[in-house]
Length: 216
Ligand code: B16
Ligand code: MG
Image (cartoon, rainbow, N blue to C red; front, side, top):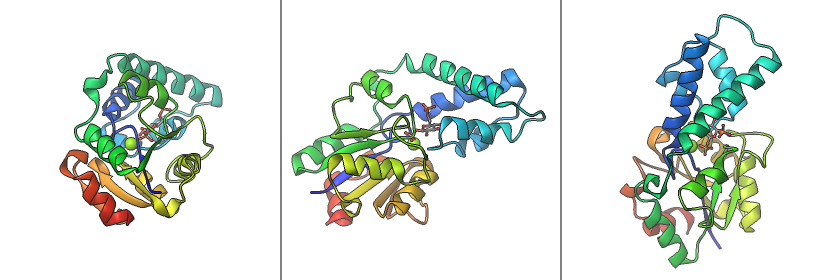
């Protein structure tokens, strides 16, 4: 058996833009420098680690309590933005990929650093579309650590060497390599040196061709 493990944010749905908007709102309120370049460093990284990266540009120090409150406030802003999600937000190419995998008998999973993953999948109508979900609630170490992908593979009963990871984050491609899984880099991660294949998005590739090229 073979499997494909999809990252969520930036691969299945463009919640990456909502993360950006929520962090921007928080940073502006706090007077902390933040822009799209800093935002790129947050892809695939946990909420607290993301906050620490952003606070690296702050002029004052923040206590543990301050940091917890800031992370929680950002999550509130983010959850407000998630309210608008619907199946129309599923990214191009995703339905065709899921259909192709099913018809080929290949398993599929979500491997996401997000603690909001299941809420997002529910809103876009894909909560029951995968054979396994591993997310930010299940892990101690977020990408580039391979933990979330290894857990997804274990939940499907598929060895890492028979898994392909689809990722939009450099940290996610690093995590796939550390898990000894094949990887397809899309969006911001495209052309990462450790990716086995790169493309702008899933719509530009035929699932069957990619699977046979990388997993067989
Ligand atoms: P949350 P992914 C990641 O999702 C995002 O890319 C990253 O920007 C975010 O900080 C992280 O989830 C945690 O998200 O605050 O919702 O728990 O790309 O791994 O699906
Ligand atoms: Mg992502």
